[in-house]
Image (cartoon, rainbow, N blue to C red; front, side):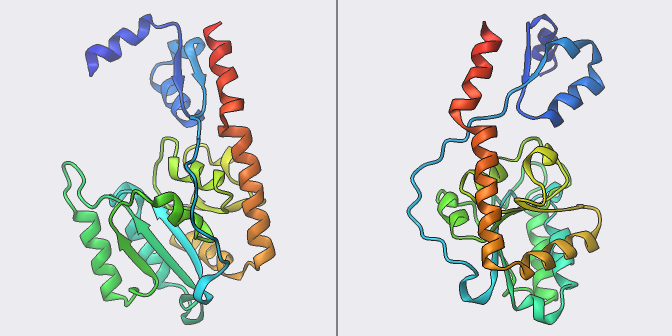
Length: 240
């Protein structure tokens, strides 16, 4: 890995898929400043076969697609759910889909969050699932697509959720300033449980018109940021 990284000094350009990644390069390799470019990944979704229903079974549904590891903050989310009022707990359901076994760590994070769920009787609020090949259809059925990570490169699940026309609830990581604002989602801080609680509470209070408008705004942002029509010209310009 170090050998191949060494050869990057001879490249004409280094393309990052987020401003966050570019800033990391600048921090550690400031001499590469003129080589660094940001081009977002193209998000081209498969056909969706599901039908969205607002607040199914009387609950706001949030879907998270992320592996079970501490950097994704599943324990922080569980701790925040414990602080919701009893009334709020009856109005929210979160489904987390991801790989349980992480190289070098096994399923430690998964087991810990599962224990938190059982200890605090959160079984009806936070459900843990294996990764699914049908995750896009699952996201499409949700009211929000969420992410509560401590750190991210460019979160594919958020980009896909936006292209599906979903409101986003996420922590202030990666390029959140370009991805989410008050028009299409809710932001919170991964290291502040109260901040996560407030974000979840707000998602519960939003009415159908507001949620659907936020979803439309997400789609408009996504088309601008991730569509093939808008991304390919950046590559052509770079090559030219």
